[in-house]
Length: 637
Image 1 (cartoon, one colour):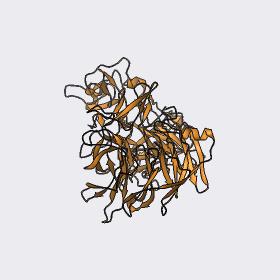
Image 2 (spheres, rainbow, N blue to C red):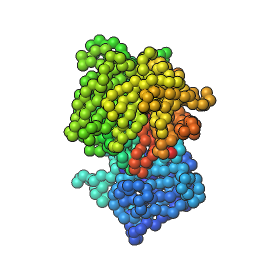
Image 3 (tube, rainbow, N blue to C red):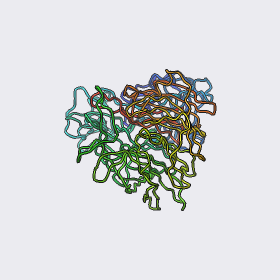
Image 4 (cartoon, rainbow, N blue to C red):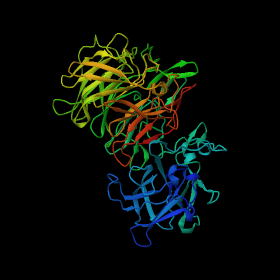
């Protein structure tokens, strides 16, 4: 949010610009930058109720984006006692500065005692006294979740309401009632007929530059680019090697009996993809060179190197089952009659370059959703893509059934897929709401042995193993401790052990406690063991439509949200540590600011927020017409 203000604030941490005030001089820390007298100045006012406000801090200012925080900064402060704000003088005027703010629990800012961290890029340093821009900087608590800002009630629904017929009416510039009362001001050039001092004047937005017209009145539903623009659930999220997180597809609107994808190609109002940039902490619309269409909810996804992914299948809608006063998502098999179908599956596959914004389409042999997809080594040096179908539907919009099909797709130099069936399907288990995990990794983010768990009906194989060496899909023989069925679980592989969290013995149930599996690849057998924990510890881990994310370091797993056994979205979080000796709980708390189910929790793989986990989307309530969880939040280890 780069709105111009006439106040002394140039950079605001923790809080919206409309709620900020100037820090008093006696509470400000003052730093001298590396330039001579008369240079630019950066002033920061700290706002909020975080521990950091009573904690010592240090700042680092970079000219341009650093590759790592170890890179020498343009300016770095010493460890400074807690203040309500600070100013840095004698800076070189210019654009694209990056500020890193850190607060510590120790008086000397010792490593390992950081309690909060904020990053903001795209800062412009201007000469002192010229009226600096206001920048919001998200400061994130360490060891917890921090929600990104949302508009307050006065902005989301102005009182009195402002009528409109188009978005432009809400975003237009109008005269300020007074300088002190100017809301979201912007300095503009005066018309030739106006007498303005210096040829400029200050105006304000009617509501906000991101406000929209809904139902005849102006509303502000998101502080984009400080937050995502579009609510989503059952979408795809992926991090590049530079740390940027792309959020793609998903259902974006709710009706009484269905969740639907709406206007996926509307770049401004409802873009089908957005990107969080870890080095600026801002969200932008992500525009591919092709329209991805509306069938991208419950798409299967596989990383293909540092910056590319493959999407396979998906659906444009998800039906709901009414359970009491709840409308529960139900992506399951069922009969269809013409266009009257709870699911509208897609046969489209996409190879997406998340950095360049290219999208190459291909066709799968059948329409499918909730498929297991993984990149595997190919014999000619080019990777292949293995797809194990979830739900499938014929081209003629036939009934949606459990998928038995599997395909191995060659990827050519033009990023197009050519798919061939893997083995015979007659004796293979039909699956949906299965989960999968790579057991043996190959160079380039590919997988040699991929394990598929659950989603099967009773009396069929609980697990399958795809081996890239022979290109075949093998059923595994359970030895002990393996459930007969499991729907909607999440799995993570850690040093030869597969941690399985959540899921149900039946669809729409969350009644399975966490357990650990080990796989004997040579004999193609599977053995399970229960995890010793109390009922109070295991109950928050009985979930569906949740996430389990391996944290940086490779030992700890962050389990977030999901539907609990009462089919209610939750905001709970658990950190599990997996070692050769067993599984232990490091932390368990109601960490999210809002409940979420059908969300994504993506580990950031690079940049200044490397190792953090970005939580996006999800459903916040299933009562009546389901509602979406607002905004995004981040967990910093």
